[in-house]
Length: 114
Image 1 (cartoon, rainbow, N blue to C red):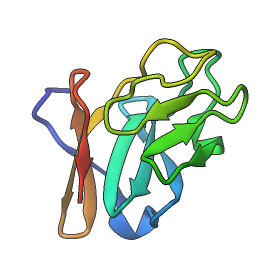
Image 2 (cartoon, rainbow, N blue to C red; image 1 turned 120 degrees about the vertical axis):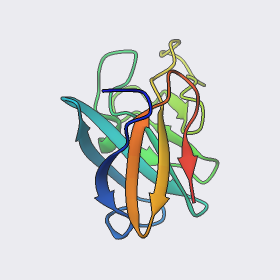
Image 3 (cartoon, rainbow, N blue to C red; image 1 turned 90 degrees about the vertical axis):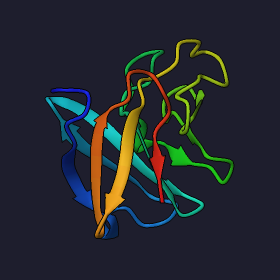
């Protein structure tokens, strides 16, 4: 996929505030999360032992907690905030246009849209 190509992956209504949704982009599971009115997109896989983060919990501070070993990741940057995970997770650029959630690879930069 070209870095500038955007793909519709969900409707904004599919991602309610405080909820997690797993979608597929180019054969990869991507986690959509809505926190504080902003939609974030990160790889739906913990960097520690590959747990699906969509089975975890979204926190009020803009993080997601892994369901297996409770590492937390920043939804904006993908940074691992708690052990046992140390490596960041991939982030995706997000845009919401006319109620549709569009993603493109962010090349490691954080992605979020209101």
